[in-house]
Length: 106
Image (cartoon, rainbow, N blue to C red):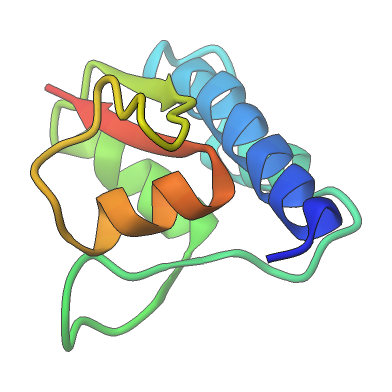
């Protein structure tokens, strides 16, 4: 993966954590947060699991708030230092590849 791709992915993760936490605190609407996360990027989609249909980021943020999520946590793992990553799997592999990931708390 090129360094520009990984930097863009890390930047998206940082924006998602910041604006997603603002939604969970009811400081901003899911629509406004999704706009701030995506910025000039392509529309963001969230897939909750294998076979699940993709949802818009607006719907995903509203769903998290409605289901009692208490926070989003930014992970910045590095090869040989996978601090905070869950058990090995697709999420952990992808987070290590781009050097970032987001975990939902609560």
